[in-house]
Figure: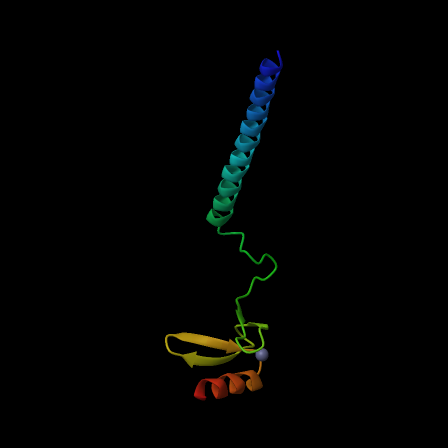
Length: 96
Ligand SMILES: [Zn+2]
């Protein structure tokens, strides 16, 4: 009798475990679908409030807009700095 009870308990445990795994899998698939939908929509940029293009100052980490940034050509890409000082600092670092 005790063995049958143990077997049933095991069965219930496996059932609960499978249900849990199934829900986890469904949530994962749903999350991926949502992410793909968000990426597919061109009208929703990752930074919702910022409509203009911003660049990260590599020296101080500040975000600067394209119009206000101090630009520096570095190979194929253009770097953007918040101030003249930051640009100078970056250029000094590159020389050393
Ligand atoms: Zn800066």
